[in-house]
Image (cartoon, rainbow, N blue to C red; front, top):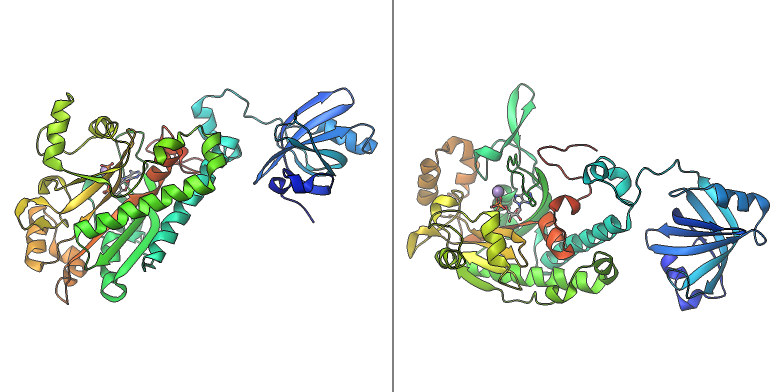
Length: 430
Ligand code: ATP
Ligand code: MN
């Protein structure tokens, strides 16, 4: 029986015999004592290996074993203020499962080297904390939508139609013809609302992003939902409660990890629904006010979003974008068809867009016109158009960039830290 290190670091374990297994995190020797900090997935604890308390062989192993060697440690738990966690193991047996070669990552390394050694860097305390927060963000997403009666479904990654426009499509050779990697599962989700009404999926989306920004990957995790009978406003109401739920869960379950990352938790506590809603035309005014050169009809770039969101301490929705800067499927506002019933949710503190969503066109004539305007061929989208022929209903949906949500909630300054193996224009290794 092995104990998790988390259990060892507790009042209940004091005076008890424990056995843990893990990896050497830090090590220091002082004569006849070797201080070894062992880590497992739950935490770290100091093992004191004294020459007189273990066999000769075990002492030799402790002296020889370097950082990242895998070990099994047995001993009695004692309290000691000087040890990093306040508890330590007075070791009676020290076994090395596998001696590590000198570990190539030391304290100060270039980002490039760390990215090349990503498979090893993932073991760091910082990356471990991020991966645990990521896990909680995904858990909160699933938990919330299932709680709201959404069914989880799965859509293809090889597709033959664009969702977000041609310029970011990845082509893949496919038995003598070309297919694409999906940019979004939205259209497939839309097909499923006619049976399940409320559906969601979490899957990769692929975009050939040529611009190098802090928040674009070429392969990212996309949490998407669609719901029959939902209006744009209904969807925003769902999303703000969802984001509030996810953030609360992270604050509750990942306090330690937020601490390790030095994340300012107070600002996360401001994330409470309802979020402010601002119309796009108002944003143009705000931008002008704060000295950003932005004209009506331009999309918000990263710089605009950063400046705007710095002024808010909770997420905000931007609504009613001009139709021409949004993909064809967005539903025009019946009161002013030059704008669409959609929304972007921008995360505060300069993080910017994390969600894009809105009502979808459900009237077949409107859809046909928008497809033609954008130069798409109806036959390529025959199945999408079909949905408007057989019992079409008003509906809405959203797409959440999961990695961007992690980046914001964990307080990271680049999206590449939010995912185990980031894919960008420059990097596909390891
Ligand atoms: P942006 O303007 O930031 O490029 P977008 O308008 O292209 O975003 P959508 O098509 O609305 O984004 O996609 C939905 C969500 O997916 C976005 O709000 C964002 O959180 C996320 N997302 C989009 N592109 C990327 C990417 N390249 N890397 C990571 N996340 C992305
Ligand atoms: Mn984009």
